[in-house]
Length: 197
Image 1 (cartoon, rainbow, N blue to C red):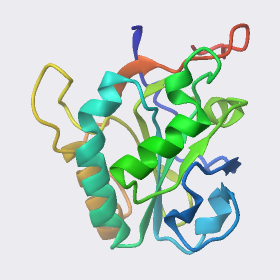
Image 2: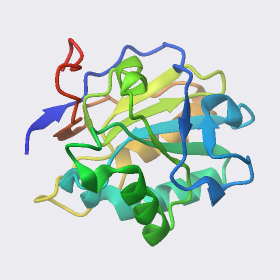
Image 3: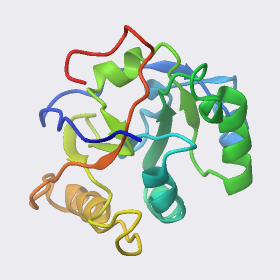
Image 4: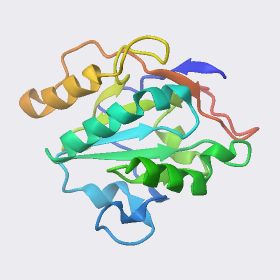
């Protein structure tokens, strides 16, 4: 297992658009088997999470992440999970396995497959999990970690992400120091690794 940190994409950037197949298209009433960022233009904020099935860092925060998503989606913040791992080399992260995981854990948000890995590159994603918070104008206001815990250290609580989601509607800015996420590196297709990886 190769562990890496977020690249910490520059704040103030617009959310890169995407349209990707959803492993759990019945999660909402948007219709069809794909989801686009623009499907959620009516949301007050969007959280994009690069994640996967097999990574112990994702598994560590998964239940608390789902709880945070359920809580804040009631406040009109849309969560979107994206798996960009190479499904050929990592079958635990295949589209079928994603669908099974989303069903088993009752994901409250769409879980999308970025098989081409182009969306991950547009977001400069480097690890799983990797978190991005965009405000109502889809401007990046937070990126980095879920909280300060790790698989071998502490129970996840999502304090960093929660603070960002609380501060943005109140003040429009995130005041805390933003620290990088840490986790398994995204499993790039051989020869297609981005320059920042």
